[in-house]
Every structure is written in C-alpha cells, then in structure tokens.
Amino acid sequence: MSDTKDPRQWFQSLIDKSENQLPFNNINWLLESRSAAKNALVKLPIPQRKLENWRYSNINKLFDIDFELVQADVADQQDIDVNNYLLDGIDSYRLVINNGHCIDSLSNINKLPEGVKLTSLRQALATDPESLSTWFGHASRDNQEIFTSLNTALVNDGLFVHIAAGVKLDKPIEVIYINHSVESSLMIQLRNLLVLENNASATLIERYLSKDQSLYFNNNLTEIVLEESASLKHYRIQDECKQAYHLGSIFLNQKASSIYKDTTISMGGAWARTDFNVDFKDEHAVCHLDGLYMVGEQQLIDCHLNIQHKAPNCASQHTFKGILYGKGRAVFDGLIYVDKLAQGTDAHLSNDNLMLTRKAEVDTKPQLEIYADDVKCSHGTTVGQLEPEQIFYMRSRGIDEDKAHKMLCMGFADEIVNTIEIEALRDYVDDVLQNTLSSINNSLDEL
Image (cartoon, rainbow, N blue to C red; front, side, top):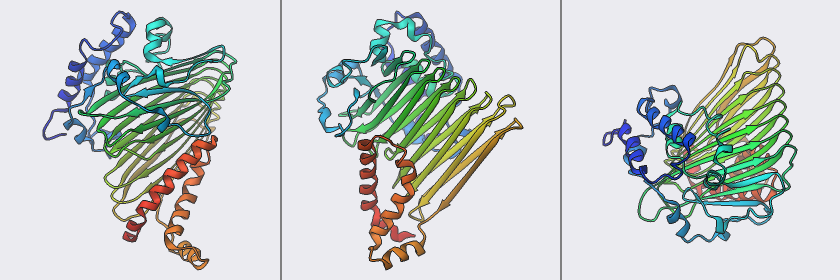
C-alpha cells in the first residue's frame, strides 16, 4: 500500500468530490445503483499483491495522486481540433469524447440508419432513462470489483449504442477519446453500453489518445450485450501518453449463435490494464480476442481474461502477443473456465512474448479450469528473444542490423495487426509500431 495515502481514503475523497456534481439525481434506478456502489467501495478489497488478480501489479503510485473530476461544461469549452485525430480513409459515424464528456459539435452522428441509436450516455439518460435500466449494470455484475464500483458510483457520461433486430450497420462507429489536463490531474469516468438485438451487426472502433503529456486516470467500463445471432467487430487502440493511467473493463454477454471479435492494441500509459469478462449465455456463440501490447521504459501493461463457458457448444479463441523493451513490464493473466454443462466447448488461449532487452519483464499465466468431458481446449505461453541466427541470415542478404530487428519484430506482431480489417486503422497501428521500433534500436544491444 501507499506510504503517503490510505487507498480507502483515496476512493472516499473521489466520492466526496462528486457530491452535488453528478447529473440525473431524479432517476431512481440510477440513484440506487450509485448508492449500492458507494456502499460496496467501503467493503471491497483494495488492489494489492495479496490479491490473485493484482499479485503482479503494483499501482501504489496511483493512490498518491489527487485526481479532479471534470464537469461537462468545462470539457465542452476546451479547444480541440478534431482534425488532428482523424485518420484518412475511415468513413464512420463518429463520437468525440473530451476528458470524459461527449462533444456534440465535434461528433458526426447525423443520418443514422433506421433502428440505430448512437449517442452519449448522458443524452440517453436525459431522454429515455427507463430503457437503459433494462441493461445497465447487468453484464458488469456491478459492485464485485472496486474500480467497477467506482465507475458506477460516479457514472456521468459515455457511449450508448442500440441496434435494432436485423439491422446491419453500413459503416463503422468510431469513438475518439481525447484526454488532456491543463493544471490538474484528471479522473476520467466513462461508462459505455452497447446492445445489439437479434441478427444485428456492427463494427466499433475505439481510440484512446492524449493531447499532450497529461496526467490522468481513465477508468473506463464497457458493457456489451449481443442477442441471438448478433455480430460485433471491435477494435480498441490504446495509445495514450506515458504519464496516463488507464483501466479498461469490458463485460460481454453473448446469447445463442452471436459472434464477437475484438482486437486490442495497447501501447501507451504509465500503467494500462485491460480486463475482459466474457459470459456465454446460450450455445453456439463465438468469441475471438486478439491482443498486442508494446511495453517500454517504466511502463506496466496488464491484460486479464476471464472467459466463462457456461453454455454448451460455444467456441473461443484468444491470441495475445507482447513486445517488451527497456525496463518495460507486462502481465498476462488469462482464465478459461468450462462449466460441467458446457459440453462441446472449443476454447484455446495463447500468449507469446518477445523480449528485446534483458531488463524487460513479463509475468504470464494462462489457465484452464475444466469441469466438462467433451471439450477441445488448449493453452500455452512462450517468452523469447530475437534469434541471432535469423539476424545473421538477414544481414548476410544485405539487410542492416537495425532493419533486421525491425522486420523480425513486425513479423512477430503481424498475426495480431492483420486481424484489423480496416486498412486505415491497420496502417496507423503499423506506423506507430514501426516508429517505436526505430526509436529503440539503440537499446537492443543490451541483449
């Protein structure tokens, strides 16, 4: 625990700061959710290394920072040139969220197809709060984890997507999160809710970016509900500044024959953690999770999977890779649980790590917990470095050493990067990776 501040008081101070600042105090079910979350904050365990889910992650520095909440009117007045963040070649329905609040003037959500609702959570709560009560908090199993409870207690704004049965969205939804602090350290509290009804399909792009070297904590929670035969492709790019703290919690409920495919790229932040929680509710659902993390000097990137197979004949495939350099640290903790009722499960999990320097470190723990008989399941992990023989071979063909290093690293990453089907987004990730590799080539002599 922190030497200078009691973590329990850290959580309480955020609650105290929010008093009389949170909107929608006239919505009974939301007030009840907030109240239950506040009560849970007093009882739930503080993240520390004695807890299995936190045993490899020391986040004591987070509790030494006094974060301030940003009000919507302040976020709306801040000068943002959205053109600096757009990618050529992506035609999308766009939502821009600045410091935790949706900015309508920078968004592009006009002319939506019939049956599609895309708006900020704040707007949805203002216009039709009762419809949100059907889904809010159900996928996330609120108040079972302290940062989830914090998000619920301070819920304010975020993304709301509802796609009616049978609707196939014609172009991607793109959400650009721009975070920056001017004078103080900011707490960004986003709550996203996505509901795709029977046979609906969509693509969602999320990009987490920083305007400058800001210090903030992005505590983001996303609930996704896929009804029968619904399909969602989800791309998440976390490319924030090196001072940022980022916790992204994804809770996914899948009904029969639904398909979810996610590619997550984590490259930024002082500490960046992604928690995937997947519940198969009915048979023949499919979930693919692919991830790539690139971890550098004084960075810690966590990736945690909790895949719950509780229905028969479902399939899940999870492939994660890491490239580590400098004194970077990574944690991969993945669990596939197969219930005794989940006969016919087909589930596979792998984690491969490429260490570019001796001082880099990774803790990797893929797990299988199986109580059914008729299953196909596997898990595995590797930790290695660039092979001198491969570098020698490439140099013998006239390729200089720096370029050989870069080519081998990009070849390692390509399996994940190539799952991004949107060319402009794939090119963006490719460029960031190549630029990072070019900047660290001098440190590769440490091996």
